[in-house]
Image (tube, rainbow, N blue to C red; front, side, top):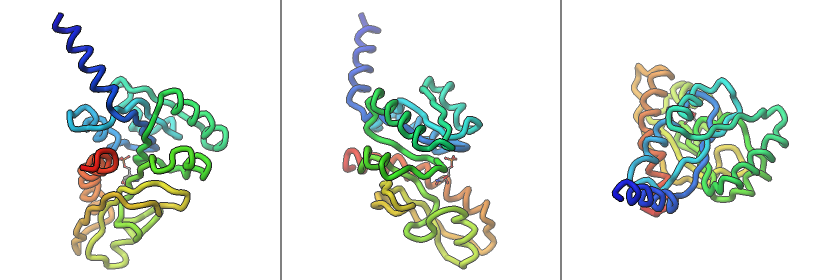
Length: 202
Ligand code: GRF
């Protein structure tokens, strides 16, 4: 009797959580962190699927490890890739998309299908340093601080509503790599907090 009861409980807890897709292109440290978070009791999300444009993305290893479905799409045919992704997200009843180092720009049409339900994490204090090479540019401009931002995705690059930000000090001797490492640690704290803020207002 006991195991059956536990199974039912797990199912009903899972059912209440927001079904989420994570989009990645590379290492996947944010993905790994979000998977860990999703297993915790305070997580409002259940990660159902990992989507990538890069079949060599290192983060894909977290799919097998954690028994999470993965799908790879060829974005050289972007329109067709997005149509297929939308179908899968619909089949999986996905209600939230978290971009975590996803390097492709999604079309306006795709974003409109998930208005207010796509989050991205960006390694700068937006609106400063949109786009690439954020750490190098912040250091070259002698900024005292950089940081990271979780924001909603709209059709303009790195420009949607900011959910949360974390400031990180830049030291004189910092290389872009040093700063990237220090900011990435903060990203791992910020993304789960931002998800909870968006979904549960905590
Ligand atoms: C992170 O710095 C994130 O802010 C940016 O891409 C990087 C992805 O890192 N959008 P990882 O693949 O999660 O390790």
